[in-house]
Structure formats: structure tokens, C-alpha cells
Image (cartoon, rainbow, N blue to C red):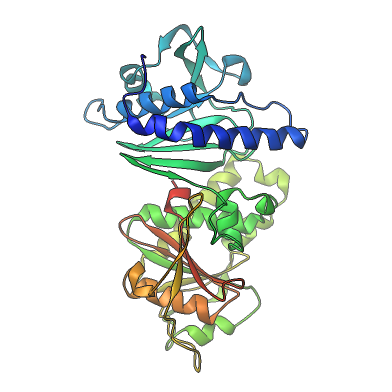
Length: 379
């Protein structure tokens, strides 16, 4: 490859290199072992460029979906290595894509003597490994594993055509993000995120995936204050609270490491998330007990009507804009913003049918509701 033909590959390379350099330095400072190799600009450009053009090549009418990981074969455990390595070309990637479409499988990419090649596939990645995943034609996500063997990733940047979004914690509006947003960004303060919070993130991703739109209200356990923001009787109130998710979370660590437990959790998450497709909002405690769905949100008695929201872009250097809540969408977004203002210890999550996903939460430092657009973090 003589050089990147996809302009965004070169445009994003330096920002991504600096991010990985900083993260790897932090991990070395903590004494982490088995760290990934640091990608330089040329590696980032080459991988992004090849992946972009491969994403536009259909195989038997199917758009390719795949993941590339930048690591040497000896940096992976149990790698599947080819007898003859393949050049890193869009055509070779597209032909291999059907074999690595399932989550958790990555084509391994490495460089020798200035040439990039595909050496095989792997499911095991070192800490902070540079990974690029193709979600749709022309939509690429750069990410890295949360930790060794976690199977979860932190998104670093999203490229969609000529639009580049480098995600980070340096937006001026991220002084006090809700725990959900901090965990999605991989903030150090959220490193000890609770199991319940991680399940709520999975619920958010499943809500977005069903593409019908929906609202989820996350309220403190053991309180009834949320009912003051609900209009009329709740047709689909749940009594006693439905506790399958909470029960799974409470199982011991040995049980949770089993594949059958992971599959049971996935099924439970999808089942509960499906309830958000019903008109109205689903109410869930911060310990993942389901209290109601199809609930109608109203303004709390004697509380002011929400008239402005701080729009928060999760991009490095982004500056929040103060907007009317109607800017974010229709009645679903407006009612979620009202709920976040009236119930300052709760959060309102809204999935749109077009894939947008917004978290509304009260910011103490700004004394206002903030809207965090997190769809790029749920890819």
C-alpha cells in the first residue's frame, strides 16, 4: 500500500496514536503486564484505510462486518495462524470477513519490513490492543479492550464517511458525568463500576438494537419518589419487582464465569430491554429490579418546567451548548429531560428509532440537566 486513499485515515491517525500512547503509559505506570504494542501513525492509517475500502465490498450481496486487531501472532494466546500470510488489502479482508463476523473474533494484522499483512485470527487480545471494527459500510469504530479477558471494549473514535468523532473525557461539559457515561468512556473513576451498572449498559445497547425507540428511567432502589413524576395509574406496574437481572448479578463470581450464566444474562437483558418498545417509559432500579414499563412521565407537582438542557458532545475539546429540550426530539425526549430535572438522583435514557441514544441527567456543577449523546459508545 503506497499510502492511505481514505482521507479520514490520515486525519485521525495522530489523535488516535496520542490516545493509545497515553493509555499504554498509564498502564505501564500501574505495573500492567502483557501490554499491546503501541500503534504508530502509519499503522493506524494503513488499518483504517484498508478497513474502510473493505467495508464497501459486498460478498454474495452481504456487506462485510469484521474486526481487525494490530498485534503480532506471539502476542495472542491460541492464535489461528495462516501458513502463508496475506497482504493487508481490502479484497483479502472482505473475503475473510464472513469467517470473523461473530463478536469476539478478530483478524490479526502486523507489520514486517514496512509491509502490513494479515497473519490469521484470534479471540485473545493483549491489554490496550488497537482494534478497528466495521459496523456498517463506511462506519468504523476504533477501540481497545477494557482489560485482559474482559471481552468488553472502550470506543476511542468513530469514523463515518468523512465525519470523525474522537471520543474522550476532555469535553468542558464532562466535569461530573453520570456513572453510566463515565463507565462508557472508560474513565478511571468508573474503573470499579458496579455489576448493575455494566448490565444497564448492556440494556442500553439492546434498547438501541431493537430499533423501535424507547425510554428507560434508572431510579435509586428503595425509594418511591419517582412515582411523583408519573402521570395516572401505571398499567404495566410490576409487583413484586421483577428481579431476574438482579438475581443473576448477585450470583457468585465462579458461577458468573460460566458460559451458561453469560447466556442467561444475555437472554434476560434482551427480554427486559424489549419492554422499552412499549409506549411509555420503563422504570428500573439502580440494582436492576424492574418496577414498571409503559409509564407516562409528567411534571412533578410544584416543580418548574424544564426550559433548557446542556447539549454534551462526547468529543475531545467539545463545548456544550444550552438548548431547549425540544431540540433533542419529540415528546419522549422532552419528558425524559423533565424527569431528569425533577428527579435529580435518577437518569433517563432515550433510544431513538434512527439509532441516536441520549442520557439525560442532572449536573450539580452546572445546576442543569445535561444531555449526553452516547450512541457512538454503544456501537
